[in-house]
Length: 54
Image 1 (cartoon, rainbow, N blue to C red):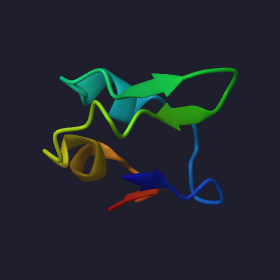
Image 2 (image 1 turned 180 degrees about the horizontal axis):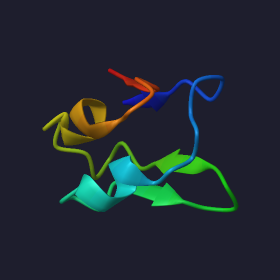
Image 3 (image 1 turned 45 degrees about the vertical axis):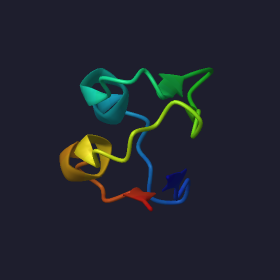
């Protein structure tokens, strides 16, 4: 999983939906912990700006 920072609005919707706690909003930046991600793609689905991709 990766973030396209040019598209990201840092709303935190992806962080709130992640059951694996693989995403964090730290200092206005989304940080992805890929080792925790189970590839459920919930973050991709919920992102209003389509800033997340596989």
